[in-house]
Image 1 (cartoon, one colour):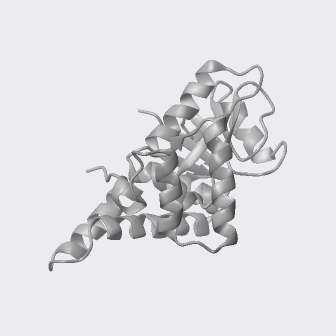
Image 2 (cartoon, rainbow, N blue to C red):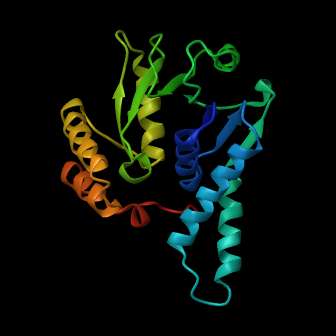
Image 3 (tube, rainbow, N blue to C red):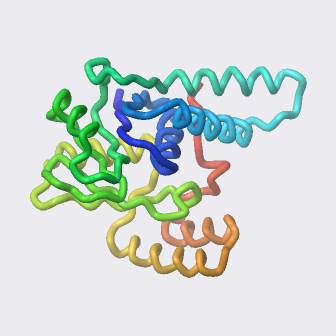
Length: 214
């Protein structure tokens, strides 16, 4: 089973982690604190409440059980030797981050998925996330030249596990222009979803697309 190591913190790191955990992919957090875990748990709870709204007397217990099961996919550690993952998700936004270097020393063959960051070597694959990412859930893979094909495949697999749709350069340019225009207009979530649906017809509204692993 594919697994990921998230290095760094922030809104995008938390949301990507939530997407992976909600779809049953193990994630290890390294170099983060308790607030990061709390943010992820809040996102998972929000996700479960949308999927299973309270209707009957036992629904609250079912929600709590589901949240606990999904959070079992997440663990935190400051001991790099206890980590395991096929892909390192770099959310440090820092060039030559010491915590990223520490993880890569233990996992020299792992692919690195750099969230909106540069690619410094053939195993580091830059991934551009289109904002507001919580609504769009689309990304463009921007591999370096030359790129390690195995690393590109692993990054693509992790995005697929997170239910993030990949767009090509042409689709990405169209999306960027349309999304920028909507942000300038303070558009609503349905308006953003309509733009995404025009690019990726099979994309459903966010509260209907995610699956919950039982």
